[in-house]
Picture (tube, rainbow, N blue to C red):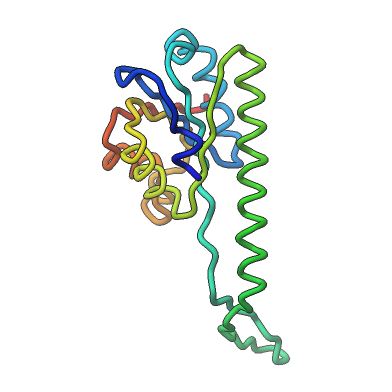
Length: 172
């Protein structure tokens, strides 16, 4: 499916720009910043809007109350439940991508959308390589040093691992 979205003719010398989004206001800001500041560059070459769908867990942990104590029970998810969660993740990603595409269209920029299942950090870098992206644009969540160290940072990972220049847009 991804190849169909980005496939098609076009000159091999085109410079592809990809903006990675999620549901946060930071990625929305990065998209708007890109449209405001690099519009001339992205109207001459393909703009790709990417969103990673989180992988679906097959095991879930439920807390059961035992008076003042709690017991945590890992439970394997029903395959129908897993399929339902995957479908909902896909629908949500497609809705966010469509909204971003509409924002681009309202500013005169033609954009293509792409979504893949996986951890956002690796999915973004994989898409950069797979589709020969020349510039990756990301929003920065503004995590402090401690949270970034403990939770990890998608933008830091992409700066270190993407096979193209990475522009990290920080919301003021």
